[in-house]
Length: 497
Image (cartoon, rainbow, N blue to C red; front, side, top):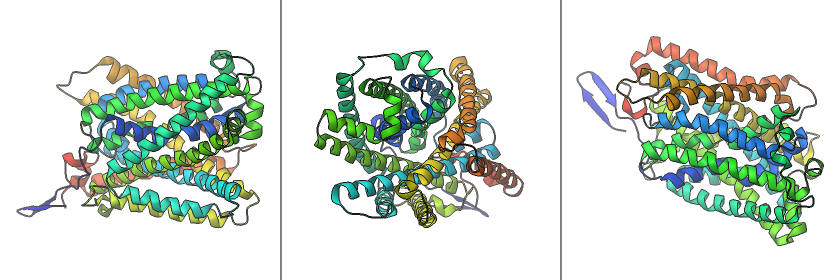
């Protein structure tokens, strides 16, 4: 971090991330890794079938993909003008107001942390179960989590292209595993190659709200392309192309694979089989129709799929910490970058510490739980990831408004009515509707027979930091106007010391 002096004013040159490392495919791998295709299919899709009893899940992925494409139109267009590791934070600050930007930043920080730490619960349960079943070794679920946190943290403080390469290999392998399953499922087809799952009558039934609420969580991470803008080879093109590519790949791949699941079990049996087997449905199918080795390999890839998602969300959190620290919205120490790798090591260490503390907290709380080995899944994973997904969908709806506000303020820019007005407005309405569906179905997402205090406490964990952020932004406006002016502008403006 360089210091330059001019009379009595000291201007701090803001730290910078390692630049020009990532191309379109690298960023796309980061995005898809966060989505975790094998995890979504084995865990998310089977859970959606079981909880909602709706077989139109494949069609829901197509419709959600269209909604997110509308969001991506304005989001990608704005990415050509705003390059900031804070992404949502910078977009809202420049498109709506600086206080709202700070509020969005805290909501994003909380949401990404909840998503990342929640996934550790699924990882711990899965690895501990595999070690018990395959090796006869019983370990507490939190032991593999602590080991995984250390590995993810090590990747987080190294060059970002190292993470991209690791994720590229893991994502490629899990795509291959799902494709093999899809082919075998279509070949089995006990009720024929039925397209009933794409019939609107199969989706537009009671329970559709919960289907969309579950489904949107499968896409979370797709919006993270802008987070890597400062490290992209060509930010003006990379972010937009990676976002569009990710939405197209995720929505079509999930739709086809969820359809394959209904065909492989039979549309009339998929709900019952999902209820009975859960995530094991996919692995049991591979063992029955293929071989035990094939099922074992898929289970290993299931673990690596979760790991890839953890790495991706960790990187997102670290860059949010970096962006906010660089602009002094949070302690400046969080903006420190590792000299040898250009990685936001302070933000990475902060996220690692949060993961360790929350894991220990859940481990202690669950020591006397009657939920047994499912404890980390039914609490840590379910509570935190659903809350995080709510926060990210809420932020996307706000960002849609920010796009409209941003381009209304631009002079000398060739504005497009579709890109800068119509598409963002439609995205705001549709994403706002999905947000409402998530909130009204939150007890369903938590697996509760009826709402409890927890049903309202978890969403409050998302909203209250946003309110606190807005108030903090307003205070900075009064007390530190130079710092306030730099909010959301990243390396464009360095706040005065």
